[in-house]
Structure formats: structure tokens, C-alpha cells
Image 1: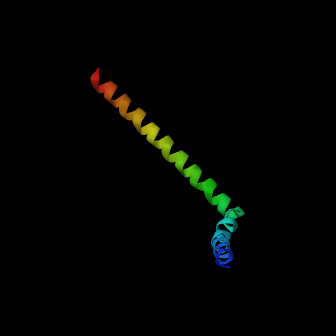
Image 2: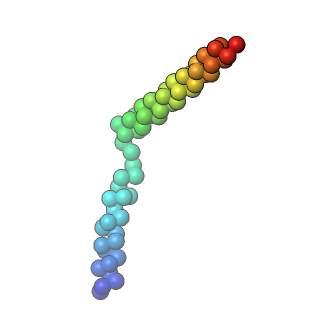
Length: 61
């Protein structure tokens, strides 16, 4: 009986994890926006690095 109770409790705690796996359309759109913002931030960082390198090269000459 104790084993059955333990199994039941374990299943009850695991159900919310399984239910949260399916993303709705709003969550998927939010993830796409997050990815786009991250990519834009990385592109800006790269551009800033290139600008800094160009400025250093220009002042070295």
C-alpha cells in the first residue's frame, strides 16, 4: 500500500511537467520575438566591435 501511495504521489507531481510541454501560438510567437531580439543584439555587438577595430586601425596609421 505504501508503494502504491508513493507511486501515486510521484505521478501527481509529474503531471504538470508533461502538461507544460505543449506551447501555444502566443508562446511560440514570444519565443520567436526573443530569438530575433537576441540576434539583433548580437549583430549590434558585432558592428560595434568592427567599428572599434576600424577606429583603432585608423588611429594607428
